[in-house]
Length: 473
Image (cartoon, rainbow, N blue to C red; front, top):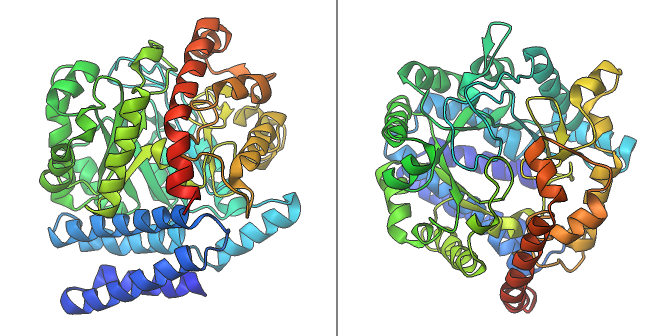
């Protein structure tokens, strides 16, 4: 009932203007605060719930600003209300039924979405790429496999949201079809696509606008200097052209940034957010703190523990004061109740171009392969109950995901990035590495030592902050 009321108000906000919108927005704000913070259905610390409230309101405000600027089209908005608002965010009876059936069969709620990298191919060759992608890669999931994955999560989980990564998704081709054909096939789902943006010409932007169920998150490393240094000379200018094409056709878009020791200070500056949100018209920003996996593993590239705390402070300002939708992985773990990998209820799993099923994009280890599962007459649900995934979810519960439990330090939410020793000793037994880079990382004692030392340093810095700022209140 609450979700239906919120859904109705949200639709009115998006479709109205002026004083009418202001009135409805105030009502929505009050009801959202009551539902998340005051009612607090999962009995989380109040401060945890406040972060969630600010996150959702910042998402709404970021979209409203761009609607008022005329860079999100009304045609796109009408479709997005059905796919993103009523589907992915608030749900409907069909989704509730699927969720209930899953829980009756398996004793737990299903994940909310998948991340799929349908191709390893990429037209760039970025330093330290987590996927080690390149233009010569020929690894692809067939269109029929991608379609079946999405159909199963749609029907079995009630999922209406999926993330497409890569490689470069705009290079995906199978059976004469492209990634845009996937979006068209599943018109009642909403898709977030990570892309380098260099292939989004006017025609692609026009098609995205017509579909109304896709938003591209375009990769940058900072400004032109930082982006071209990692991605190649001239890439940044192509990114700005992609921004222009998307604005022209009214498609909301965001940016995705890999935070490293070298650009972390840039991500603390207010001017950086002014440029992308105010000047370029992004609707959201994803920040992924560098995880040393993939091509060119380098533990020294991670933002320092001190930089990470500064980034946490900056993220709070974005949400609470500037009302900009920014998600910082892993500083934002508090709004997701910690780690969302391993097919956790409301979380996700990752499937790469070979069909390997992994807990997360940044956990390059697997037990099952989706192509083998389908060939054996099984479904994606079977992959959720491998010992690997179950051990990951058991750790999540112990670390505070269990209802009513006092959470562990969700400023350190990641099972592999922030708790590497525990991951290697208790979760990652009997796993297979995605590639040679992942194998080297798992077997290298110096890598293990560097990751553990980093975790211990950040724990000393963040533990007191977590207890005083979140638990004490």
